[in-house]
Image (cartoon, helix red, strand yellow):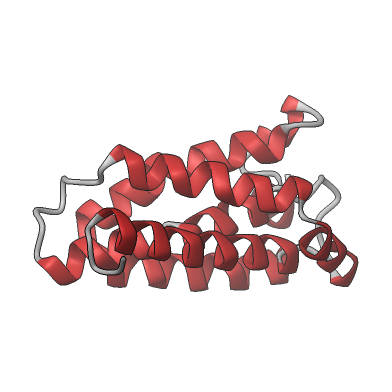
Length: 152
């Protein structure tokens, strides 16, 4: 099997069918926690950037459906959680469920339902998922600021 197919299809996860992208995003959650645990926010950022570059490389070469881009968008959505914990000096094993659950749900909602984000898919893989992850990250930052009493 070609390396581009393994990257694009997340080691065969694409075989789960129509909703394989959601499963790829779900797989991104424990991987993000592991990256955060091992190296904090800098490692999650580095993995996101390297992963995005691999997706861009694999996209024109792959013969399998592209679902790895959903993982990258999901990791981007989790940047505020990881970054906030890292800045506060929280123990690396801490990765609170409200943050990653909100990140998952909001990112998936933007990817699936938000028209302007969906239209970016026409430009090629990854762009719609990066936009969904960025919008989700912004909403998570606002939600964290409100829930922790930093604003309002």
